[in-house]
Image 1 (cartoon, rainbow, N blue to C red):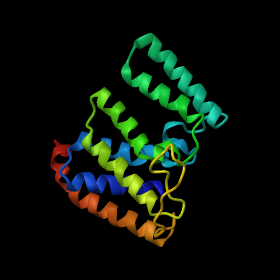
Image 2: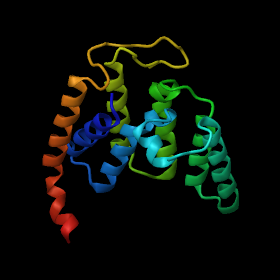
Image 3: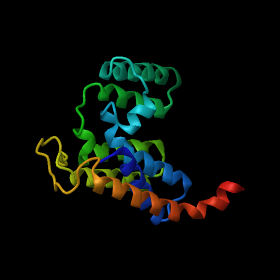
Image 4: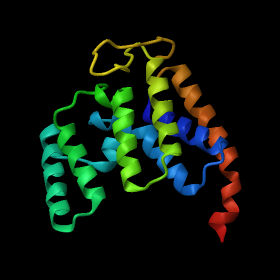
Amino acid sequence: MRGSTHLFSGLAAASLLGTDLPGLGMAALGALLPDIDHPDSLISREITPGAPLGRIGRGLIGLAILGAWYQTRLPLLLTVGITFVALAFLPHRGITHSLLGLVLAWLAVKALGWPQAPFLIGYGIHLAEDLLTPSGIPLLYPWQERMRVPLIQTGGIIDRALGLTAMVIFLIAAWRYVPVLLH
């Protein structure tokens, strides 16, 4: 699935469940995070634009962030630093596209004290959508067998229609936030 489809599907689901504004941010993070292991994904392009040397660059960025954590002891820096170092070694649609990845990401979100339910909604929607592609996902990682129900081609008409529908649902459901944002 395309990054925009994941993003709007996660946002639509969370907004329909009455998530507040910070929760919507967490739903967006959860919906995009599984693809952080792919250098051309929406989240990777936004977080590490032009990272030198691809995976090696991510590892170096992670080490720099861990150095900042060592100086400040901010838990967020530790979590992000470890993540970036790990990304230097992880293949796309590996652990981040599994139930184990979901649990590990949820534990990090919980440890940081961030909203958990919307994050889990976004992450779960991402996994469900990628399960519907021919590539499938290793849902029971470390078992490498990919599970799939090949109904949707990434970038195909159904993917685009799903993304557009989710965007419209999100915009309608999020309309209630307009007065809050204007004040």
